[in-house]
Length: 314
Image (cartoon, rainbow, N blue to C red; front, side):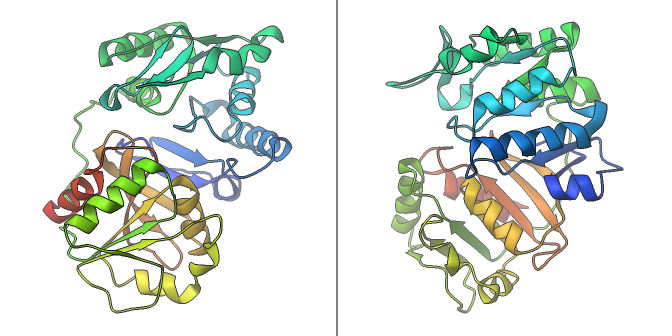
């Protein structure tokens, strides 16, 4: 989700079945991270066909998972725009792109090398360095002026979409009711997430495995989406209806919970902080419930508390 008003987030299957009519922007979840490269390529090609001439941008995984070259290659071959501009910067979290590499503290990932085969194939793919919000603003203007498709973890894509829609970064997203009872459903073991769980524990909110229980003001359900996904039972999903808001932490976790709930789409309702977005579920067991989506590697150790405070304020 991009933190923009008038955005619907939906599955690829939902896009093919019932295109998002009536929204200024549709964000499509390709669900490729846990799939093989061949299937990822097929799903990406299906999305390009279903979107027709409206595909504007592509958001890559914040940890460069999910067959990034497949996604970027499909964007470059789509013919939508005159080329693809890729960067990997999230200024708020100290993440930048330098000499074609993603830099986060002592971590280095060679994005340019990852995408070099596409350039050798002759595809119009350009990896661009950036560090600050001002850099991203300049890249967004370039995408708009030169008809380039932006590809990044979200900040650049959001800027370009806002530019195309004429939307302000501070455009209001409407009032929402404060959330009394909040459930955190955490299926990722990312070190950053573990610190966030630990901090909630220090505040008195202890983690437990997904189970059927009476809903408290705050419940934290933590498990391994790889080994324990069967804990997300129909009864557990029904129980989640007792909460005013549900925080889904980890991309695979959100995919699994929403898919099992048989949702149709999410209606975007703004950002808690960069790459931590909220929305309202349409369809399925969780119909009408507010959800907050957060990637496993996103935020600092107090991010869960920030989300809780945001939900409580309304």
